[in-house]
Amino acid sequence: DAGVIQSPRHEVTEMGQEVTLRCKPISGHDYLFWYRQTMMRGLELLIYFNNNVPIDDSGMPEDRFSAKMPNASFSTLKIQPSEPRDSAVYFCASTSSVLGNTEAFFGQGTRLTVV
Amino acid sequence: AQSVTQLGSHVSVSEGALVLLRCNYSSSVPPYLFWYVQYPNQGLQLLLKYTTGATLVKGINGFEAEFKKSETSFHLTKPSAHMSDAAEYFCAVSGGSGNTPLVFGKGTRLSVIA
Image (cartoon, rainbow over all chains, first blue to last red):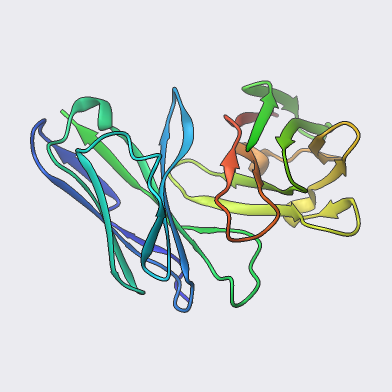
């Protein structure tokens, strides 16, 4: 398996622009997590899905952030409008309850820079 | 609710010396505990995990960790550091299943000096 695939790997955008981050989980995994990593706050959970349904979005910082999972093989995290303080590395991870996984498998991350 | 405290944001050791990275957790349910490693500009890779059973767990690259319930600790060790071990290490806890989200510590950067 190719693992969790995130795109783009790097994104530079201007303040006020819309940014969309993409994630393809490992095939067959039924849980998907979005994390944000910053120097100040470390790794924070933003939102997670089970069978494409959002379970907990309490970590989403504000209404500018939204996440969707239209099907089992694709998820997006959108920021509109973006702000410089959104600059961070965003990770997607997936796991399988059916396979009895106990750990999450992470993608390579998307480094977002908002200028 | 779960939380993780990693003591020391930066640890520096000489090549060949013992590596000890400290992790203490808090959990209201029997925890699952994990150590992940992150190399520069890479994602997180699982080093090892404790779920149930034997409290001393061995992972990849010669690392091991011991779950001590009485001390709420899960410290990571390696007998002899190698230059390639230089990376960021994260301890994480989840609430007793693979389906609850991981809660991470702030991370410890390990430097290995030749």
